[in-house]
Length: 107
Length: 120
Image: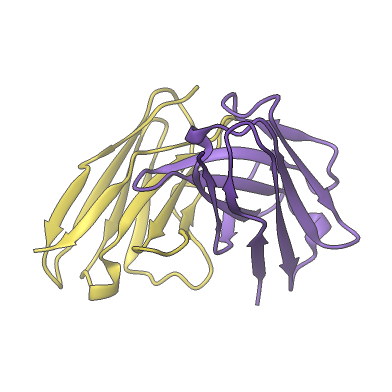
């Protein structure tokens, strides 16, 4: 199975900050990488697929990059509703695997 | 607007069975692969099962293989997950998820989830 490792596991940031979350795959997954946002008590929401393509309706303050084994999610100018847990996921092959999550908290 | 309404969760004893359903609307259901993802209390996301649009191809996680079966009824726009021989470690919120296309794609919409609790 492909292992997905996110860093950091959590971070504290202020409204208006720019944050970057890293996701590393244990083998080459080309660009078969998705990012999800999960607010407390809510279902996950799809943000990005194919490493850098925004899902419909997702604001452009979210951006993704990377290919192969190393990927990043960047959120520019954090707003209160961006404080949530973010997950990466590979879909290069089954079984799908997710990163352990990165919790973005208010400083 | 796409809707995925999961139901069928509840409290069940270890060794018992439960059938989850997911009613889909506002998209061409048979065109898209569908998946179940679960989340144990306070934990991360875990992929469970995937089915192709036609229903002819399925995938299951090793942790549920032989116990869970994913299926779909395209005439009723319904996705199902039959869960047998349930274990305490199956306790989780189960999310019904729509793919962007075939089983080779990822997901773009998540339902609200249904809670399954396996306990005596």
